[in-house]
Image (cartoon, rainbow, N blue to C red; front, side, top):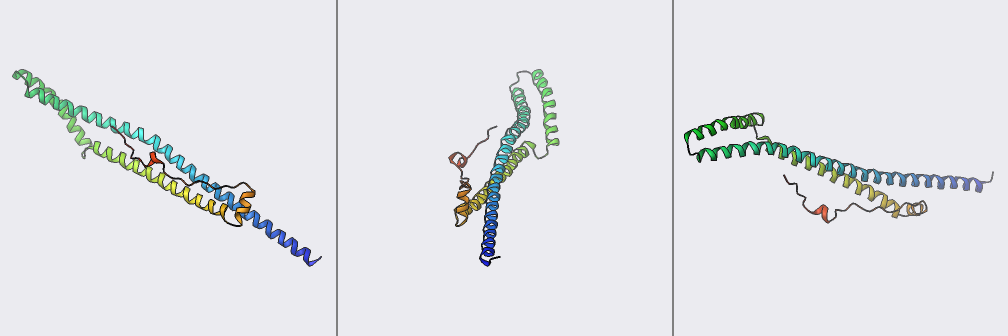
Length: 184
């Protein structure tokens, strides 16, 4: 066998291996970017599902406590404005069960659980936002890797030949930068 033929075959094998390695690296980086983007979607869905459930839960606690408090305040005002002792005593009798409800609430929720529910809502929303932020950072890191490969020589030649393109970084738009509000 001719030594130049052996050199040509070895060179062809090296080039083929290089192409395979670069191509597989590009595929891997593209898939990492897709996976990271999917992670953002999953976390956004989690946030979308979590917020209404937490808000409704907190509303339920707050409404129950506010209803009890409003009833106690209403009865107290009626007692102060009662024209007769009989009316006042009847109203005082109604305050007892309402106060019992308040005491039951304070026993069941010693630290005023509605506040804890609000803190829980805030804690869960913060956790979801941190997960979304982490997913965005992971996506941008993956995009950085694929973009470097797609734009760097000589992998850019292989990337262009096989249709690999730049990916856009995840950047917050104006609505993402705006402070979102949750109303109760």
